Each structure stands twice: as structure tokens, then as C-alpha cells.
Image (tube, rainbow, N blue to C red):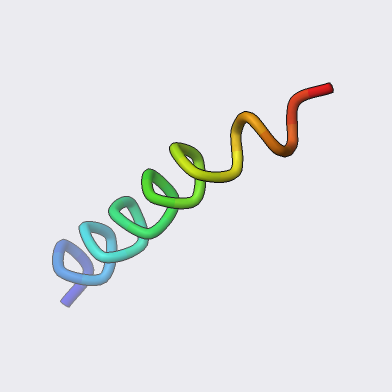
Length: 26
């Protein structure tokens, strides 16, 4: 469970970072 949830969260965070990094960074 922990590994699966961690993988999902990591994937979501990675996706948000890729698309949101340029928007979030000044």
C-alpha cells in the first residue's frame, strides 16, 4: 500500500512539477 501510494503521489507531483514549474517560477 505505502509503495503504491508513494508511487502515485510521486507521479502526480512529477507531473505537476513539469507543467507547473514554469508557471510557478517567477
